[in-house]
Length: 422
Image (cartoon, rainbow, N blue to C red):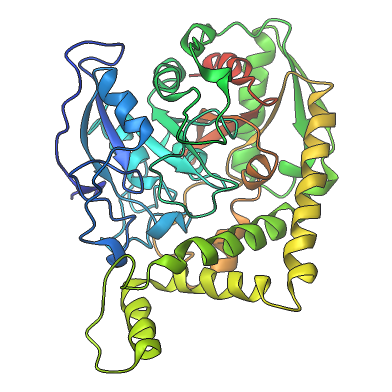
């Protein structure tokens, strides 16, 4: 059975030589590719063909990579299972009958199945790390500002970063080396990643490394996931690392804060898809309001409509201070907690996902279950920090990922920690 990992399969050849010469890369379908349609997994953009490349795609081509297609995804990055795509769900090649995670599920599935050597995803609340964990591959969410977002179709722009997926930590680091660095077309980028050599950090040397384990991100996880997580920590301890427990009290409110901020930004960013400025236009004989309503009803799926409505409500007059402002206060609290915990550890470690891959269809009727599954990943996006998910082992034959979180722009340390396992 086809994985349905790609929305569009089309080869884009890169330069003749470079650090990625001879390597194939799948690109998530919310990253612009000149002359190749970019749908964001939505009927709203089914026929959209960008006239330009995203900065990361330009850098892939300059590095000699061959893009082999646009990877399937949850519509506009909204989902944790890659089941909300207008182009159908994606199969998990590492766990038959289970979801591949989301929203970069097509990218992770393509790598896990060998349909691409490497892949790019985007991570707004765990959308690279979640599918990496569910498909048994490696995924990196870079520090906010390390990788240009120019050409990434925005969902929640204060949270999202483009990140690599690969079979091994070293290969993911090689791809990060290519895409990292300042970009004059994205004012949020910083120079820290310019001329980086993250691949050199993938040496597996964790001797003397101190690992903090946030108990809040372990308690309540599936028993098999917890057991696999601590087995991985024991492996790191045998290699010379040590670990201690830390508290992150604010993460109990991170999911609520994350979804208020993400949905608010989504309601603003997606307002331009009205059939006049951008996107699908419905046939309508009514007035402008009726045409606008019919266009968005046809173009957007249920999950996108839900988030636009909730985000619009949170930003509406009379509720802004009650919801959005409080969510931003909670975001600052989360960041302070992480900074304090990382003051006493080189990295923080937790299960990437508190559960093994869901059975297909299990979360579609209960969106809250899907939102809570991101509890271990969304705090990292709120704090703008880097994180990596690497395979930790299996429980009942299903992949389990371990997540390492580092200080801002300290990608080298999380890559070193992860490389001791994968």
